[in-house]
Length: 226
Image (cartoon, rainbow, N blue to C red; front, side, top):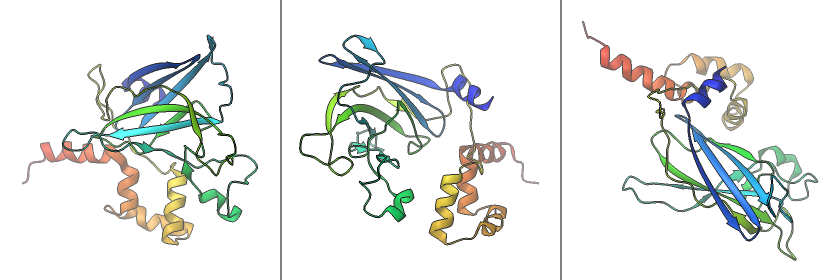
């Protein structure tokens, strides 16, 4: 039900681009804290066909700075490499390894970017990637086959086109993030509860997300100091 509500309040932006006989179409949806990307392929006029030689997709992102100028192109990182694991130097640390999607491309047709934050303006570009001759899979930079082209500006906010604004927390279900914090802080599982109880603890603040900020803002607007 929450997922359906998220769809209701999200605004979509689409862009298609054709390179020779390959076309990529990218559609982006946003809420107050994330941008979700979906893309489709067309090869030789056939919808959703496999792109010859494609190993996956690189995702590029740009952000506007406070002066309204676009920053550098950021290549999103991927936590999933290739199945044989030969591209990971230390297999014991495989679960913690990330690489740019220009090396470890996303082998799927959707991705949620949690790195786009409320109040930012972003754009995205998807590129189909292939292995150049003589290069090593999962080690060397891949080359581009085709791209979607950059989307229009996406203003990450809680506002939608229908006048509804919706805010969400992140909740304890963000198990990967919590597990990473436990590892970095060298906590035991039982150490989580005392931190969650502290109102201004960084973990609690992060998990409360944009919902906490907006609720405190509303309370501050109506609060009457006795």
